[in-house]
Length: 417
Image (spheres, rainbow, N blue to C red):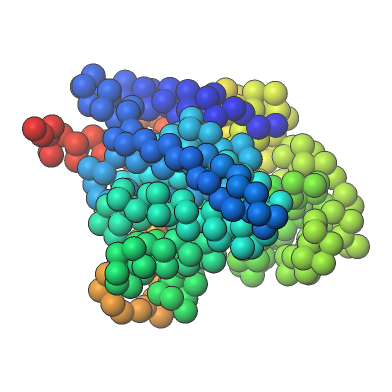
């Protein structure tokens, strides 16, 4: 149940308008925040393994850099389009502001199906895409990172291509790299760790016991799997998980590591021996304490929001809940920890990685987790404070906090020339 890129962008802009109304922002500031600073559309010719040339369409949307260099992931997916990338770039601006790191927001994407491409084809695509973006990215301009179907290997190719063109090693041009070439400890599980901290803090805030709490996770990729592992280690009970092929449930709890072994062996979590298969749609409506949507946007909609029985939703994915669904959930008093807060652990550790690269030193794993935990807790409390002050849900609380910070930066800088 995916929403179109156009609808996604409309939803994101509507949320901005709502926040601007509440904050009583000047109309000119609102107009400024609605429009990306730069949009790049690329034709990327790639020689395929069979010798043919295929032309892919790539994008990089740089929304706002009033608070620092543009920052945001690159996704490789068949559904990538300009509206989707623009919406995600705007959300990145809010996300970096919510956790108060000195970055703006950007997003990139290539319309392709990486599952049908060889490693060498992906490398040629990535290097060609990077070369085309060379003039508009850089350590103090725009710093890409991994997103859907891109990983540390893709980041290493981007870093190498940029460095070769620059004529000097430039590890700080991307984050989410392998540790061997300047990546940070904990980057792989950073988003999931941030999600897990938000589950823990929400349990405290809403009078739930984390130990033994029932949790269902939609999406068993990097974020879903690592969140399952962390929360399982903290004593929660992972009762259901799913991937694009379907889901599994065991009310006594699943072992996240064993489920991942099964997925690697068979290609999906379905048919796991210690569980029953369920549909993805069914997983979303289970009677549980916490639901973590960690797949793609537009999963909780006006059609299924009234069937949600989780007490708290913690959004691991970007934009998994439509505005219509959000209104229904709020009316039903289902608590939602929004994406721009809940999954900001990734960009926070990306910031730590960038700082380490720029200053040419490395922090230990424990220090990074301690810094991440502290920042996520503060951001959770700041968001909660805003939602209480303006008597609204946490999504609008996070948005008000973010938009206010970005608007203040824009006003301070002014428009030049």
